[in-house]
Length: 255
Image (cartoon, rainbow, N blue to C red):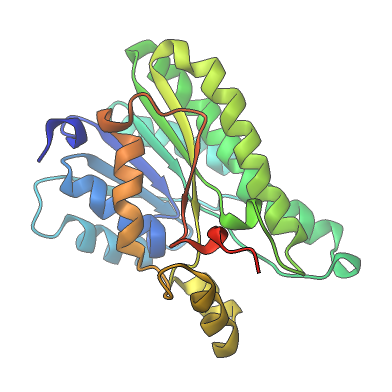
């Protein structure tokens, strides 16, 4: 492996790492030599994912169970993650959800739940783990935004707002943490075949999304691992405050 992409001796924490994009990124980091911690609400899924991610590799993969909408639980989890390997070098704030609703149907409860999960939990994790990165003079924080932060669709007010908030938070933190050797970036995935769109979209909508991309297809989760590795490694050491679109050319199209 190119030394610039080597994550040996690094520890990566991926929230929402038991399936989909989180699991794919975790496997990519483990293949690059990192020890990995994955989190989700469901221990059975985490157990299976940890076995899959570590299969055939020397990297250690551990997991923590936490509900990311429970702020005290998120704070405890960050402390437990540090204890597992003594540090966390790479934080991927991936956990999130989408509850499509028209504006006039949005309830305060659902709005607050989306922002607690998609934005606040990310801030809490970064706030808890950034001090250790500063002490060591090296760190990577990656937020999973979305093309829905840049463009949108009807019924996506809360989701688009939450994902756009991550982009603003990323830019501010990039300036705050850059002097300490820490980069902060966003990934903005387009249409990837994960449980979320599979369960939310009709077959007609899935085909419509595919036709709007430059590649005329949905992305496979493994295709996000490379961009994530770039931002997590020394290969991306001069990239910070940036949102990297990984959308198959979706946002190139105007009409």
